Amino acid sequence: MLRGIYTGASGMIAQQARMDVVANNLANVDKTGFKKDLAVFKAFPDMLIRRVSDNGLGVTPAGSYDTMPYVGKLGTGVEVNEVYTDFDQGSLQRTENNFDLALEGRGFLTVQTERGERYTRNGAFTINQDNILMTHTGYPVVGENGLIRVQQNNFIVNERGEIMINAAFDPTDMVSMANNDWSQPVVLDRLKLADFEKIRELKKEGDSLWRETEFSGPPLPPENLKVIQGFLEKSNVNMIREMVDMIEVQRSYEANQKAVQTHDTELGRLINEVAR
Image 1 (cartoon, rainbow, N blue to C red):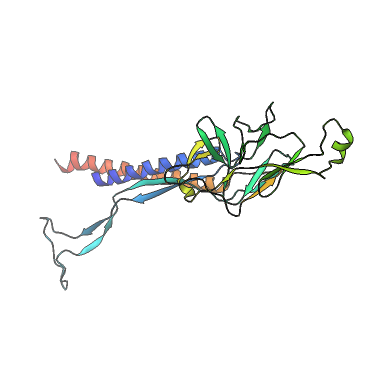
Image 2 (cartoon, helix red, strand yellow):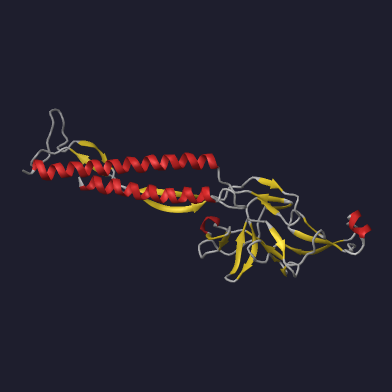
């Protein structure tokens, strides 16, 4: 009886943890560059059930040489093994904003925070009063030569992450601005792009930021990563899939809850009726 209560309770705890993950995914379904989380469970060791007589001794059915015939397996519960991030590519959305950058492939952009360098897939940027390229949460974007300073309508970013400015651009010359003359492009800097050997070991810090850990290894130059200007990467959360998972979690939780209630009722009958 008690084993059944413990098993059902472990299932309820596991489903509660899974519900937290699903709810967090749904809450960030519209967040640029968000990567959904997945909960992984592992079962406690199964127990073999064998038939015994009332006095606890093994019985030998007619025609059998097994003194304790095998009946089946008994599960002893489940627990959360880990919650990990799924880094599958999200769909790209055109914005026509030069400050918006999307990544296609495996890798991250680097930003500078008060806690050190952090990594993000959220390429919705802007500039501050000093013309420094910033995230909307106030973190400067890092290039290979340091902070990046650009002027509005006077820079482009190619697929390799190189930031080019127009040396012929004169904000006081209306003809030059109207013609958008790029006859003198100059490479200003290159975005500091990063990848990791064990990307699954990165830790989330909120605001679509990740930090490296001792298990993820140091940042490495990414392979097959393209930067696309004028686009944003949407989250990789499928709302319909998450809603289906939420219903499944709720029903699994209720099934485990019913099992606990049933065992509790039977245990009460055992103590109050059978014992008398």
